[in-house]
Image (cartoon, rainbow, N blue to C red; front, side):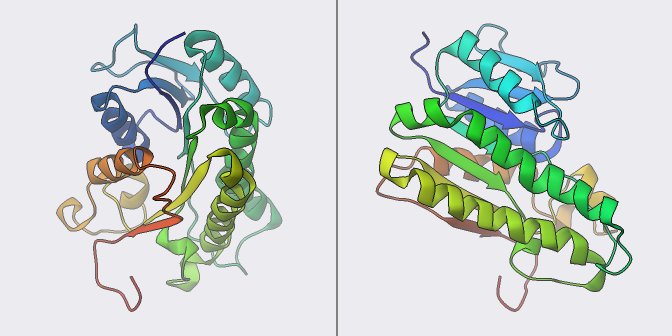
Amino acid sequence: MKESKCVLISGAGRGIGLSVARAFAAKGWSLSLGMRNPILPDWASATEHQAVFYDATDPHSAASWTHEAMARFGRIDAVVANAGIASQKTVIEAEDDDIDALLTVNVKAPRQLVKAAWDPLSRSGQGRVFIIASLSGKRVKSAGSGAYAVSKFAAVGLAHAIRHAGFAVGIRATAVCPGFVATDMARGLTDRDDRLMTDPDDIGRIVAMLACLPNEASVAEFAINCQLEESF
C-alpha cells in the first residue's frame, strides 16, 4: 500500500481537471485520473499515477474506477468531481433530454463517484471532496445560462449535502465555483480573450491547497471570478 495520499480526478484529460492533476502531483499525491481516453499526460509518472476509463454518463463507471484505484493504491483520500457539460439554452428552449443530460453529468455522476469512494474516504479520516461547480451555481447571469445554472445550483447543493453526510468521519466537501476559466468549454461560450479569464492552473493550485487544510479549516464554498460582479 502506498504511503502517499491518493486523489481521483474526473475529466482529467484537459482543462481544469488536467490543471488540478498537475497541482496534486506537485504536492506528491498519487493520481487516479478518470477520462474517456485514459492516457497519462507526458509529465505524469507511470509508477505514481494511473489513467482509468471513466464515463460520467454511465452509472456503473464510478464503481469500476474506484475499484481500479483501490487495487492500485490501496486508498482514496480525495475526489475531485470535475467532469461536466455546458448548455446555452434557456429553461424554456431546453427539452427534457437536455435537462436530463445536464443533471446526469453535472449532478448524478459526481454523487455516484463520491458514493463509490465513500468507504475509503471515511477510513482516511481526512477525506476531501471537491465538486467543481460554477458561479452559475450561485446566480443566474443570463437567460442563456439558465438550464446550465439549474444543474450547477444542484451541484453546489450536492457539495453541502456531502459535507453534512461525512463531517463526523472527517470528510470535508467544497463546492468550487469559478466564473469564466480559459478552457475549451469557456471558449465555446464567450469571445473573451484567455488573458481576461481565470487561468485553469490557478484553479488547480486552489483545489490542491484546500485539500491540504486540516479538518478544523473546512471551506464549504470557494468562489473565483475573473470579472467584477454584484456579489462575487
